[in-house]
Length: 115
Ligand SMILES: Cn1cc(C(=O)NCCCNC(=O)c2ccc(F)cc2)ccc1=O
Image (cartoon, rainbow, N blue to C red; front, top):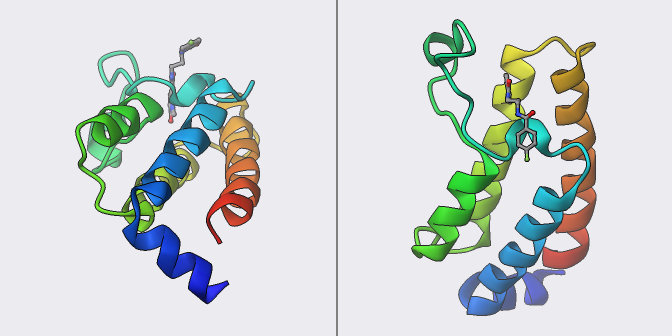
């Protein structure tokens, strides 16, 4: 609730929790399309359609190099992965389904850990 949120926002605890959350996302069985940046040479049209690519390895690098000021900025990048996936992939496709599965998992976990 509100007090907890404020505590999470400012302390490194909030970002430590993001590392826990990222490790869980990377370990998920449906994470494979999102572990590394989409290879736009191998995926025709990707670079043109997706203006802000994002993936778990990029988020990990940004966490390690202190590029997130708080857990909200971390959440924005994770959600970008799912928005890009929905934009580029049919819902009824292997990667589309993996994106929906990961988003459902993430929404539940960050609510438990950070709210
Ligand atoms: C998010 N997205 C991903 C792709 C895509 O083709 N991504 C590469 C999949 C191939 N990567 C693997 O199979 C893999 C990677 C790491 C690993 F540890 C195990 C397997 C295409 C469109 C799109 O929107």
